[in-house]
Image (cartoon, rainbow, N blue to C red; front, side, top):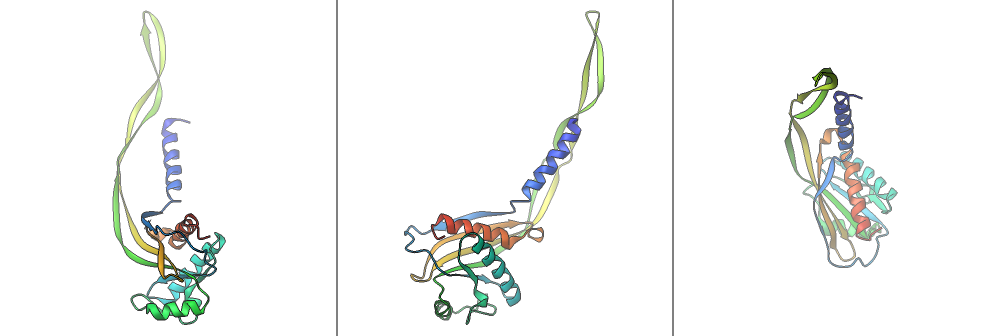
Length: 210
């Protein structure tokens, strides 16, 4: 394969690999206190004003967490916790309702920021085969491959980004165990809920909660 064919192929592979990692943890915190017990029932609370969207995301996140070892349930399906909660949750009432439902751990996620982000990719250079050249050296002919240097243009990549803060609380002590802030790029073409759920599962596992 000529270099001119190799470069586009490698670029395509790189873009495909990049597409698999659109969500990253940009900040994290964990309690210095040792985990006393593993939860038997964890409620997933996603703070969104739209009740149907909130329920759909909670269900998706809970299903992924269950597959990864956390006994999670969507909070919007529990008695006394339904409806929109963004800026409206009553902590005492919610805590009582969760305890009545047999919940001993709570995962709370809410949108904490976002907007448009852009980055400039520099131009690329590569050698392109153009043929065979030759000449004479001490009366003898010689031949060699001839390459020219090509330059590809740079470009600016503009993407929507979303920041989500997620925390886990032990309902018996009412204390936070860990907290992370995730950043998702290109969220219009990314399964953000699945990506964040995977990060949550990693935190639950590393904290010894699974």
